Length: 80
Image (cartoon, rainbow, N blue to C red; front, side):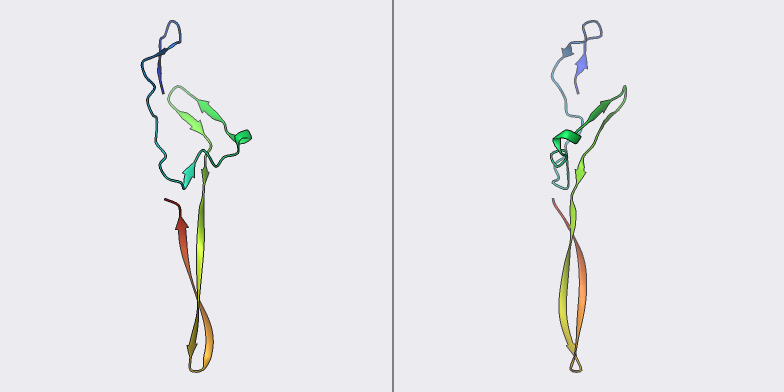
């Protein structure tokens, strides 16, 4: 974000960050270039971004009383 001179509409001073996205889970880089859009209003900035998550399934073979049984466990995998 950068302040504009009201008469000339030229930038004043240095630009400042609006928000930092330090997580790989949410990223502007994962949006296809032909789908990237930014809309600017008087009090907001709107843009699309991608969120990446996944799941890891662990299967264990349990044997009890001579019978085999599969037990599953789901764990969410999130990029940091």
